[in-house]
Image 1: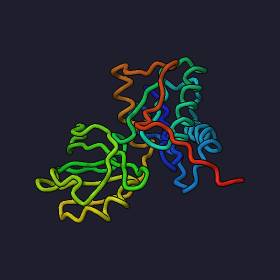
Image 2 (image 1 turned 30 degrees about the vertical axis):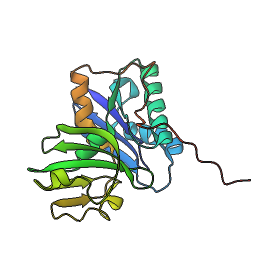
Image 3 (image 1 turned 180 degrees about the vertical axis):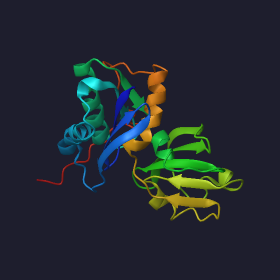
Image 4 (image 1 turned 135 degrees about the vertical axis):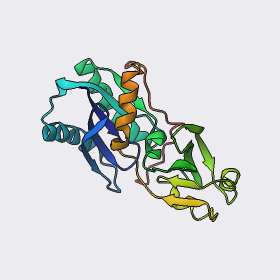
Length: 223
């Protein structure tokens, strides 16, 4: 019986899930429009463990959403996960953010495009088939009205994520379906357990989030 703590902080959703052998036991999250991870993440971790009556010493591993996503959010999540793993001497597991996001859709045919909003008309996106096999790796894509025409012509495409709002203003194809969703730690549970069984762990000393792009600091508007 293996308990894994899953942490998702790549967007405004501060999300923590405890799983037992890959099955979700408890989820605690806040989908506030304001980033509050620094204040809430450790509180949510403690609340999830308290609700399930599980001690930190019983955790077999900690899994964290690796990105892409918010630079600050990812750093907070990874720092918390690393701290727990160092303190408890347990392995760190990373789960690609867009792969977990794709699991918000259950489909029999067609494909899933998981996407996160980026700057202007850009998204971070990855494409999966109906069995969640990756058929286009994570990349930064600038959208226009012809985006994804190559797959829309032949099959239904389910767009899911925070990049959906800007996408549906451009893509008007009848094979396109849109679902605005935030990543959640709940969809990480099965993926992190599979990695645990395969002993697919990260190097605690050197692991860094997958930012996809370099961080660009926005100048303060304060004088």
